[in-house]
Image (cartoon, rainbow, N blue to C red; front, side):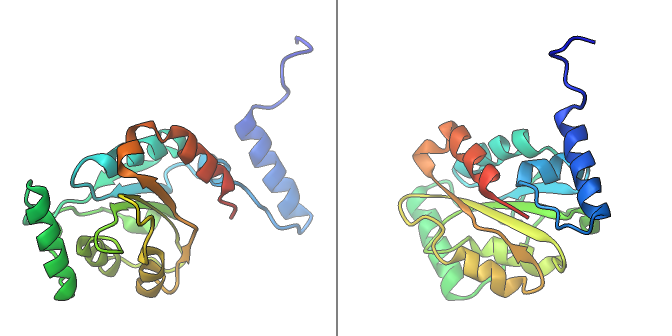
Length: 197
């Protein structure tokens, strides 16, 4: 064996370290990417995107964490015209509406960590996300929110998610300016490295 050949791969090292910590009764702290590398098949990246910006960030995250990726779509699509879409989003928020989703996520129970992405509309996530969070049981799950925005960052969306999912753990979110969505790889990597379970 070469003196430069590591005894363990990174994934094997993470697993071995976790096992040793558990045997010694110590808490196990992994970064998000390490936890997800160990927990194959238990991670979901789910997102709603109108302009395509949130989709770009979701794909960047998915490349890092793996697992499954799903795009949320509503039964009634939002208008393509920006002003018309903004007007509809405001009206839905004023009415506390719950737009119907056509996307169905099979076997949601298997996911432990769920990355949820959306644009910031009127200070929070689109009302379709409220539908999503009320549709499934998030008790005991970890939610990592991320959003694209034009200057208002996460708004109050993190607080809304905590209110909708009181038995879930909601991590600090990632906010990406819409115009930077396609080149946000370093921001995504830094965010993932900062999330500790």
